[in-house]
Each structure stands twice: as C-alpha cells, then as structure tokens.
Length: 124
Length: 107
Image (cartoon, rainbow over all chains, first blue to last red; front, side, top):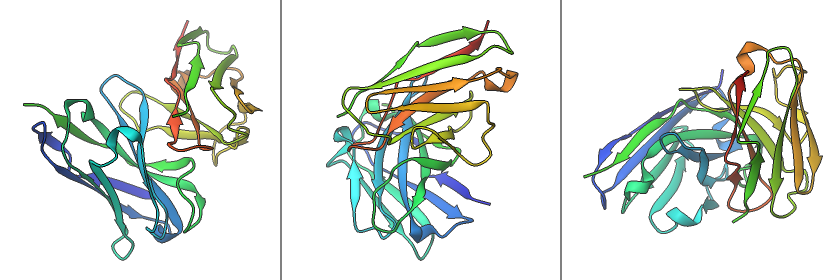
C-alpha cells in the first residue's frame, strides 16, 4: 500500500524558513517523480515544485523560484521541501504527491497518490 | 504560465442525474490532462489521466473526453459520494497547473 506522510508544518514568521519532509512507503521511491502541491485556506490547488526520480532535475512554479528548494533522499525514501524567505501568501496545506508515471528521468506529470498534507502558517 | 479555466464554478445537480464539467486551456495541452476529486478535509483523488483514462478503482460512471484546449468530465447517475470539488490539471507545460475547481453540489 502506498503511503505518503508529510511532516514539518507549523507557524513561522514572515521571512523565516521551514523544512517539510514526506516519508514514502509501499512503492519503488526512486522510480517516480515527486511533487509538492499546496492549497491555501479555502482556495484551489497549486503545484509548487517537482523532482524526477533520480533527483537530477527539479522544477518550480515562478512564485517560489529562488526561495524554495526541493530535494529527495532515495536511500531514506524521503522527499523534502526547504522553504526560505517565507511570505504570508505561502500559508497553505502542503501535500506531497507521487507521480502516476514510472520514470527516473522525467519530471512530474499527474499525481496518483497524495499525502494528507501539513499546514504551514506564515504570520507575525 | 498556462491558465486552466473550469466552468461552471458551481454546479447544482440532483442525485441520479448526470453532470458535465468543463475545463479549457489557454493553449494546447494535447491529451496531457488529469481530473481530480476533492472532498472537504481530504487530499485530492486522481480520477482521470491522459484526458480519458480512468485511474485504478474509479467507477465507470466517470468519463473524460477532449484534447487540445477543450476537455470535459462527465459523471453519469450521480451518487451521494460524488458531491465534491473537481479540478483539472495540465501536464504538458511547465509549470504544471490546475484549474480553479468546480464545486458539484446537491440540488
């Protein structure tokens, strides 16, 4: 059974940093691209960042480029999102999502499994 | 960034009836389109990928169609558990992007 368990959310001040983790199990982690997708309170879904299965290629939406860094440790089956220079508008539930297509080299496409999310609140 | 526009924003339908949800891309995404269902307090669930392929375990009453810039999600004979918010998502271009969602509510 595929499981994705996010952690690391919480309250952080504007300009601060936070590191999210996603522990994966139940599938060959290194064979799949992974993504972070966020949802602000009462709003829709926003794809934030993705990484290919090998970890060699990373992808970001424009609003987080230069502030967020996605990475993965395939030996630990864990995905990370390092968030720096956080803004109030980054407040959201952050979901870890597994790609639906098996490839070590291609970036994220669509998402067939999702974690339950971790809430990041950026506020003074 | 590609813009995905869903319509209507809210759709009121009676149980047992059918529903048609639309998604439009501002440029062609070929067939690289997925649909998700999200219920309150839950993570999204994949319904359709490749514009028309049902994901594992998705009932046959869900069907997707379209290519290029115009896509449709059709739900036949709505069940109580189908009332939720539905999102389309393109994976043809970077960054990946979602529509703003259609809320399917009980009439």
